[in-house]
Length: 256
Ligand code: ATP
Image (tube, rainbow, N blue to C red; front, side, top):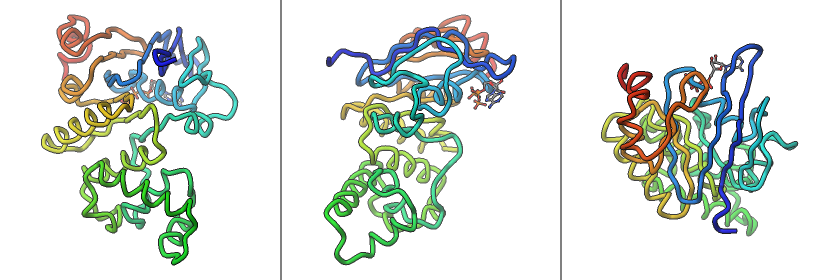
């Protein structure tokens, strides 16, 4: 149904030995929302995302993402096929491949960088491959890198590399896009442009989860914000409400 949540978490937790990386998290995410997840270093943001994207299985609680049970067999590949796409905190671009080639890797129609190279140069590429190229090109345009589609990833500015990661994540046409610290290392102008891009993607119907250290950007961009501290949700709600929560100010914003 149209109003089925994109994501539901019920008491989800992850222990590493004795460490509660994430503890008893309840969360619901609806189509078209831009959910911000903030919290100090080690608060459990990455662990939470890893559970949603199928990279890590929860040790307690349960949840569903796009109809798939969290921690179900098949892991991250199956979750990706169900329509969840993500970027990573540390860049996973192929330095020597071009903007377009890196984006092609995200279409899931091609997987190996060597193969990507070959198909771009193939005079009689098959129909699927042509479709992959035009699909990738559309995402490159969408993030504003059309004029650099043949530039190797390594030659892009830091901010543009992060945009390229988003283009690649979009290439599989995800229903849920998870961005893990996309504004890290960006200057204010780049972060403002990124915020605008994220809002335009949401307006196009992509549900977004934004994990960020840049609190001001999160408050500017998101429709709802969740604050994690020591693995637990200490506040959640609209940005203005969260920003004025005394517990949040004490735990997080105060020390920012
Ligand atoms: P950051 O903003 O620094 O990326 P974070 O909010 O994403 O932090 P996590 O990386 O999820 O936090 O870590 C939460 C806690 O779980 C930390 O105490 C961390 O040391 C611990 N942790 C995370 N991954 C593992 C692991 N694979 N093995 C053991 N402990 C881990």
